Amino acid sequence: MWIRDGEWVLRRCTISQWNFDPFDSFFGSAGGFFDRGAHVARYRCYPVSFLGKDDMERGNKISMPSSALNELASRNISWPMMFELRNDAKNKKTHAGVLEFVSDDGMCHIPYWMMQNLLLGEGDYVTITNVRLPKANWVKFRPQSENYWEISNPKAVLETALRNFATLTIGDRIPIYYLSNVYELEVMDLRPSDACCIIETDMEVEFAETKKKQKTEVAQPVPGKRIDGKTPVLRQKDVPAVKPWEHRLPHGVRTSCEEFDKLVRLGSVIAPSPKR
Image 1 (spheres, helix red, strand yellow):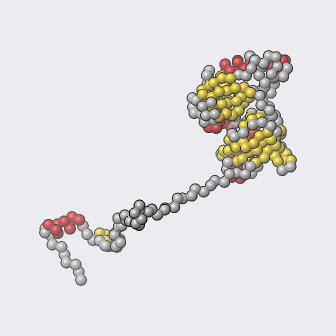
Image 2 (spheres, rainbow, N blue to C red):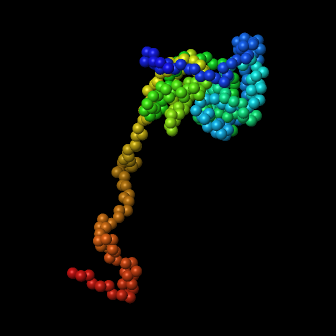
Image 3 (tube, rainbow, N blue to C red):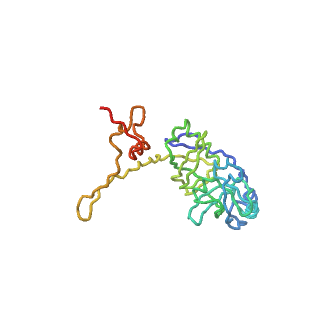
């Protein structure tokens, strides 16, 4: 990583599990004669925690069923594999890589933060399509909290975190894990496309100013008016006695007793005369 013209430039040297392209080696570049079209499938999605793999929350790689691997292998698919994830019901979409093919048929597992971006619930359908994305050369992030700048070396933390990501999509909020904290960065802008691959690429990084939370204004009471123009009379609440010392002595000892007062009224006892 180095700084050029006041911008962060990250040199990506991540080795992807899909770095070798057998189709490209033997049949030419992707999209050639043996290209049979994109793989499109609908799956019920669940969080990666259902697989017991919470570490997948640190990036945007998903798990798909083994049947998807067989289908993809039968096509001339560009490598590394990248996918568009779309929630048709909410008109939301993002992009991801794939880590493994261990999910049950008809199911996929994706990081929970991606489900939140897509407005997906557990068991909802997501449409997954394999796509080709250009390599990113410039990105602008906006931290969602000022606390991000309290990190001692935010540049190194960002570079390390992005190694777990295969793609970036404008509008996504990605998590950055550091120590025991999670920081959110919104992808504000991206070049050369709205969605890009960030595997083994150099890209310039800029930051937008963090949004300041607006203070909530407390509504002030407005005096009401009657239809006849007269000033409304407000009912006063019951006010407790303004002489709290009555019926009490120092240290909280009561000077009156309801049972004794009742006996006095019945004439059973004679109340003592107050001392003068």
